[in-house]
Every structure is written in structure tokens, then in C-alpha cells.
Length: 369
Image (tube, rainbow, N blue to C red; front, side, top):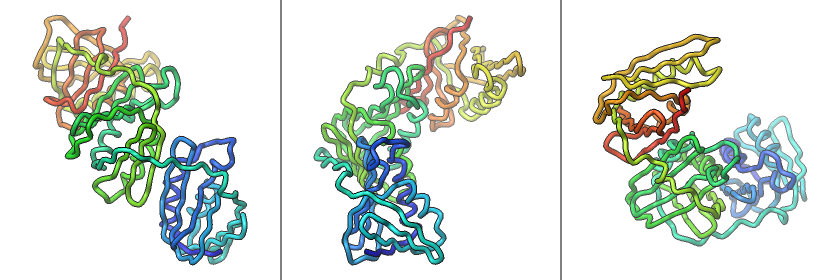
């Protein structure tokens, strides 16, 4: 069997799908794409047993076939071909990729061993792609990179109440809650999603020209449908800790500060401490915050940034924090001003947007000696 397709279309799809393939798997079939041809269309599926992604590519072919192709090798070969159109020839369990002056032969596997994808039957919603990307961008810095300690914290809660949807993330040192108001009534959703599925989804839909995507939620799976692609993931059968208990209810200090001025000041000070503790001290002054950074082996720095109080205790307040964590928290604010709320030197601080709870970032401060 021989088929032809556009190289750029095929290469773009498989480069997106390779992120689903496990980095190392002892099960050979999981290192493969399921490659099916039917009705002049290539249907490509990748799976790691928890997440699956299916994409479609148009081709020229009058025959049908189903075969498992080594994913990384196939992706790398197709990516590096110069031809605008490539020819794929299948003969039993062998694939030959023909270029104008070259060819590559790949040993394949029968399709029988490839995992059977779940049939997701549940409630379907239509969701704004821009809103999803905005929420994920805000919470992604806080998602732990390694599944250590409380494994529930390694997941992303996705929740809804009516038209409000929320994403939450925590790494035990900080908590972020991002909200969005949708036109669709999402009812009451309480699910725990694998971070990998949101990471893959955000990477793909960021290139999409569509404004919305379909989300189907069942008891055990979640499915996203967009641009002739389907992404399915199992849900985590567990409960995320009650994050509302972590958010401080009272604050002795409330003030707003220019977002860009504060970020730039912190970034400059971080240069001094980035190779050691990464910590910066913040002292609340009468009409400003005094930021200082010091490293005995490097040097020191000081920045003063004007602020405007709405509440202020008469007691002095000084906090120590991780500079990178602070910068990432401020970057989630999409307004010109950032609001800070703080109860005292030994309490967590809250970063949010003024007059809104659509973004709340709670950061545990470091106890000063």
C-alpha cells in the first residue's frame, strides 16, 4: 500500500503528538503511534495509558491499513525531510518513507497490542480557548514538577459553579486560584486532572484559530475536542485539600503597587541572589516598600517602590520571601496595579488583582532569624 500526504501537515501533527509518548517505557507499543488510513485520511493516535491524543491528516490513498509505527523515529525523519510531499509505502510490518533522493525503512508493530481508547460518555460543555489558556498560564508555575509528597498536590483541580470556572494549583509553598466567567452554565464540576493533559492541551490550542472547544466530562475521564483532534485523559480519583482554608481571611496591611515597576525591581535584585538563596527582604515603609537583597559572596542591592495603602497597621512589618515565587505570582496579574494583603511578618501574603477575586496567589513567607 502507498499513500501521499503533505509533509508540513504530517510533521506538525506528529510533533504535537510526540508529547503524549512516554519518555521511557518498557512496553514497546506505548513508544508507537497507531497509524490508520481510511477514506483518504490518516488517523494518528498516541497513548501512555492515561492520556491519548488522536489527530487527522488528509492523504491520497485508495486503500486502508492499521499499523503501529515507532513514534520518535518517525517524527524525527518526517521533520527533517525537505520534500513538500512525501510518499509512505507499507508492506506487512515495514514502512518505507520515500523522498526524492532518499528513503528510510522502519520496522513496525501490529496494531492489536495498541491500547483501546475509552468511550467518553458524559456532559458536554463549550469553553472559550482564550479563557482556558489564561487560567492555565496563571496556575502552571505552581504545579509541582515532580510527583513527591502529597500526590494530590501534583494534580490540577478544575471546578465550576454555574458560569464560573476555576483552576487551582499548589506546591505547599504557594497556592493559586484562577477564575473565569463563561457564557455557558457549567453547573457544578469537581474534578482532579493530570497536569500533563492540560500542558499538552494548552500547547496545541494556543496555535488554534478556533474560539471555542468542546469539553466532555464523565465519571472517570475528560475529553477535549478541537480542530479535528481529540484529547482524552483519565481523572484522578481523589480529593484535593480544601484550598479555601489556606487563603487568609484578614489583613492588617493592604496596598496597591505598580505591577511593572515591582516586577522590574524584583528582577534586578534577583540577579544578586539567584546563585545562592534567591531570597529578597521586603519592609513596609510609610508610602513605599523597601526591597533588599544580599549575598556575602556577590554583593547587595536595594530598591524602593512607591505604594498606596488602603489599610495599614501601626506596627512595623518586614517579610522575607523567595524572589522567583514572588515574580511568578505578580506575572499572573493582568492589571496595571497589583494588590497585596498581609496580616503580619509571619503570615502568608496574598497577591491579587484590585477589586477582584479572579486571581489569588498565596505565598508562604520565610521566617526571619
